[in-house]
Length: 563
Image (spheres, rainbow, N blue to C red):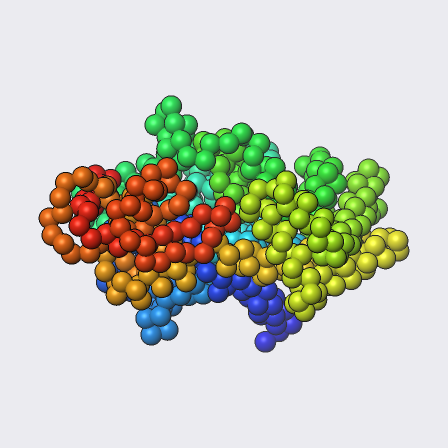
């Protein structure tokens, strides 16, 4: 094994360990428990073609992510837990960091590759989606890999196998989240050709791009065609019209109307979730102008960054996970700017670059100091918590209470030490060392958040133990609720908690029924009077609880919404 291969293998191993933090945290709410329920359907009932969630609704995404997760569960003897449901995303994120390192290293050298790798892992917006049981990280890996593979092909320096390989990878990406994968890749290439003052129609009129598209479509059709036939075309209305087109167009034109936010929302989220590294963006913008001075390899990555942020900014729905494909090109382009010798940069670019390094290093050191102050001032924590939302107050309390624990102390010491190194390197005029130290300090901060704080909050929010207690108490009998789907509790209970409506008619029989109610409901008292309390959950962050009732002779019936 040569040095480059050894470096990539080491980077993959380190990324896998780093990104696996929080892998076993319990699910909370619906974001992960619903996809995990789809994997359960494959493992337990063998529904590989059309898997459904715990309520029987067919998957709204193509099944590649669920297939891979189910294969992992089968290899583990049919065991499916939080770690198993998230493992595909973790491995995809680690692989993606290696792809970034390999691409950057090809033009920037080994040091530039490692710097891009560290920048990527120093972005919270990227790492927070690694140990997450959703399709987005796998999609990002496949789209970005195909996009990088097509660079020499677009430049006319690649054999036919590059076009074919990219087609296969895009086909897998389409089986992960639909035609969006092809749209993002094609849009990135089109933006690149425009930035490079090349006519996109010239490439579009050649045969090879269509070969790539044909291979991708053929691979995706291997599942889409039989799935559409089996659902009599209904699948197209969900996966293509709602999940793709419906999220792009506004509600007045037939869109879903979900996650509607201002056009600048995703750009602000991208900057915020890549701090402190996003402080280099002003210098990066100056370095990129004029574009003719930027190398083609970096311009190609800039095009994808623009395409992703631009496409989703004009889309109707704007969710935080939509910016995920923007982080890999950002890491590469930023590393390229930082690796550029000072004499090749304009004076203003150098000033902004150095100012960003100073602000990032000083800011990280200040944050650690403030954290230590908070940990020693319990009264201050209580005062601040009183003016925060419940989740933010919980984050603050978890951070303050964990300062005495060894793992949190090590991460904070690592962040402080790296910040000190960054400031020392800044004083010596070594911008690459400054950026590398800032990236390491940011990685320590990200590790603290995704490995300790966020799993700690999940442990406080989840109703996993309550669901397991319910199953032990009821013996797995049906449980109903007047408030619609409860994916998290259903996942841990092992059966759907179905929706119902209370009726004043006499009972059809005297068999006991179990009803799950939430103390914050306006008609909670009415439900409590209809039965006897069996179990009560611990209080949620807002102080309310789930109550399990045993209803004897009162009549209830499934509502029209969920039967």
